[in-house]
Length: 335
Image (cartoon, rainbow, N blue to C red; front, side, top):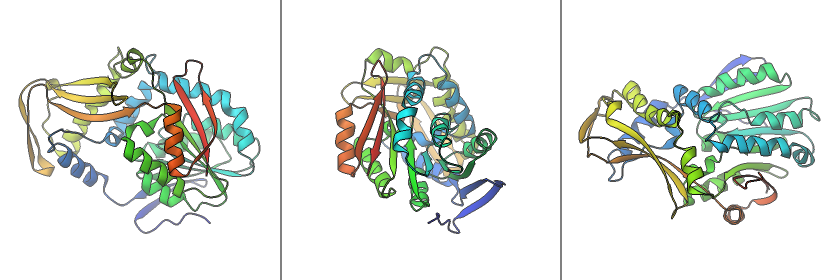
C-alpha cells in the first residue's frame, strides 16, 4: 500500500522521480506558540527542533565537519564498516525512511548497499526544514534509481504518512538525535517508530555513548565558534520571523555536560539584565543577568540503557556496531 497524503498537504513535483510533500499547517504559527510558551516558563527554553531553518541547517553542516565534533565522523566510520553486514539484513526490496534527513550524507551508505540488489529505491526523507528539497535534488543527480518523496513535517507526522508504504522498509535515525528527547519522550518516540513498522521492517539508530566530560564539552564548544553561531541563530529567527528585538551582543552561548543526568545542555545566557519584546506574539520578557534559555538537551546513553528502552517499545536489537574508542554506536532493530 502506498502512503495516502490528505488535503492537509501540498504536493510539489520537482522531477519525474522526485516529489515534495509539505504540510499546510503554518510552521511560523507553531514556532510562535512554542516561543511564547517557553519564554514564559520559570526555567525558559526553546525546543531544539527550531535550530533547523535554512541558516541553521547550513551551520549544522559546518559543525559536522569540525575536528571537535566527533559524532558525525564516528558515525560515518561505523557506517562504512557496517555496509557489508547491512547487505545481509537488507534481504529483498526495501524502501528507506529517514527521520531528520538534513543533507542525507549518511544515508548514501544505505543507498550504496541497496543499489547492488534493487533496480529502484523508494526514499522518504522527513525533516522539519525545507533542506529536504535541496538535498533531494542533489541525491537525484547522484542516484538515478532513487524515487524520492520528501516530507516537510515533524517526525510523528512523517511516520504516520510512511507506515503503509509498499513492501518492507528501513527507518534510519542518525546523529544521535534520540538524545534531544528527555528519557520519557525518548521512550515514547521509540514506541511511535515501532507502531510505524510492519513485518520485516528494520530501524537503524545512531546513539552517542557516555564518555569523558572533556571530549563531550569540546564537541559543543568548538574553537571556531560555529556552535555558538548555530545556537544564537535562534535569536535571529525570533527577530526576523516574529518581530523580536533581541540584541545578539547581550547574549552568549553556553554548553556543559550534566554528569548526573548524563546529558549535554546547551543554553543562551543573558549577559545583562534586560527586557526583550516579540511583536507578533505580543510578548515582553524580563531577563536577569546570567539567566539562561535552554535550547537543547543531548542525552548520552549506554548500550544496556538502549536495549532496555527498545525492549519496552517492542524493538529487538539484532546488530550493534561501535567505533574503536567506544564513542558512538549504530544499533539495528527488528520488530
